[in-house]
Amino acid sequence: MERLPITAVTQLRGLATRVSDQFALVPSVHLPKAAGEAFAVEFGRFLDQTNGAAQSEQLFKLLSAFALNFDCPWTAYGLPASDQKFFKPVRRYPAVMLNYPDAWQERYIEMGYDKIDPIIKTSRKRAGAFRWSEVYNDTSTTEDERRVFDEAATFGIRSGISVPLHGPDGSFAIMSFAQSWDREFQTKTITYLQLAAVHFHVRVADFASSSGSEEAPHLSPREKECILWTARGKSSWEIGKILGISVNTVNFHLKKAKQKLDTSSRALASIKAIKFGIIEV
Image 1 (cartoon, rainbow, N blue to C red):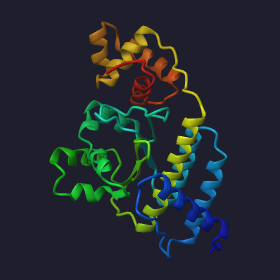
Image 2: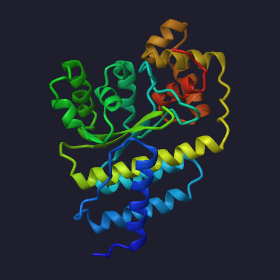
Image 3: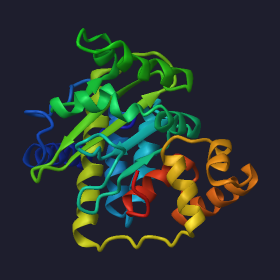
């Protein structure tokens, strides 16, 4: 096995110090002795790559690729609003970035799961990373809250961890990593993903403080209407009935809106439209 480079160890320790200084993540970050040289090498590579990234979207792609080292194909980053009504931006942070299955994203919005998501509730009270299984088995978790986990599993999201990110300026974000099968996350895995999440958040904050706000795209009145009703959980058929247009016409306008908002799913298009102030739900 490749020996652990001294630079990788230095980067790990340096990042842990920065985490302690800037975020109330954990009292101290301790890397297990048996963390695994290969993971340390990959983490060092991740740090090098992200330091050269110029956009938050590029950072997210690098983070998602790093998470694959731990068999986590699903990654999500978001800043929940205080009233838990969708994900809204704080300052100029991205409102949300995720690669969850489109079908689950749409189902999540349709069912209003953001209002009862136990991950959001737990993250507000916790400082360090936690396993979803801990929340599911907690006696304070309600059956309605457990249903969020149960239904996510039907879409292939069966286990995961979340990392609360509480900033000194009052900002609050959540980073989640998920797997497609039921398996507990090892401590060393949580340590690396936690450090990666904090590094990502710090870099995104740097982008937000050094660049101006992204310009909102121009949507036609009909595109705005279709996105608005999509954000309210309506299907194309229901939107057509409400607006008095055909399903094909609804899908056409939604397709144009997604292109302008540079998203691949209706769920993300709705979230970005809210972020830009194009619609109000």
